[in-house]
Length: 427
Image (cartoon, rainbow, N blue to C red):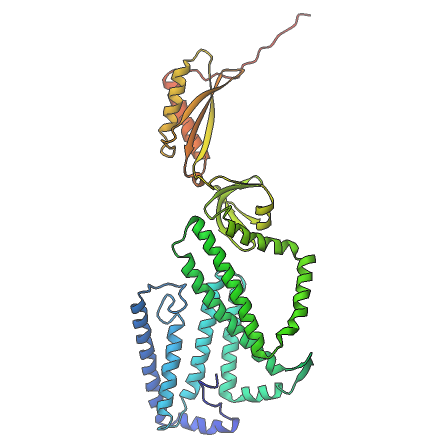
């Protein structure tokens, strides 16, 4: 920040600063600053047109509008800094001493907010993190402009304690937290860009593999970013071996189920035993897989209910994949007719009724069979194939049963009622 902004004013310099704000040169600075805003807006507009990116709220660089993304405040900061350097030797600085810190805070807020929105989407903590970043950035800007920030940091640097072979102060911890946050934001930005590239226009098994690659890249980047942040603070990474051993013991004792879910998630995505879009049945729950996360798999049934299944269950229990090798599913319905009915006619009517349904496949064609001699009549089973089980089965069965009922009534084929013979013994 110090490389971009001028040295903060001392408290006894505020009188000269306020005097400079009342001079005619302040109007010149305001006019130059307005020109910087127009120039930054134009450059951002040209950049969006050159890359051909449409308005997209998920775009980190541009956002829905030109001023929503990170590009506009960054360009405005660069243009404003160059304008300040060009005017510094000609007129006393007053407006730009406030404008540059404000632009730095605005760029930091916009970068942090957009990256968090893209990386975590609708996570509950995103809004709280966005407000925290905004408050911290504006408070730091006010303290810098007022000249209190260096004084506070000097005082906090006097509060130190020893950790192992390193001496840590409050200032060091603040710098470490800011460095770690910046590194993690950049890491999330890079991983979000890679994920967007990998998942673009991917479907089925290809989508599952790309999600696995994306999750692995994000975990690796987060780990490397954390190590870089700790190194930047001055913490000896060899001391983390004890912490790593403690984490290993914790996973072995209390977090083994959670770790099993994460490992199973990578196994599922790597093996592609189940894929996004497959229709599966897990523990009597049947539906379509809509997402495979690192810890759980999301299954949505045709009734609209969603089931969150831990990945460990997907690898340890029996899972029926209805569309692993073939998306076609065989269904059937049973019909009873009277014993005096024409069997050949009944079978032909049943097949024709099923074939008239648009969802029923013609190849393989529907088939009917005399499946049982029931107590009340002949039982026929009508079998048919469909290729869209995700659209549900109840409506299809109802449509076919109604068509069968109409055909049997048109040909006066009896559908028998249940019959019981009662024997009365004489006294």
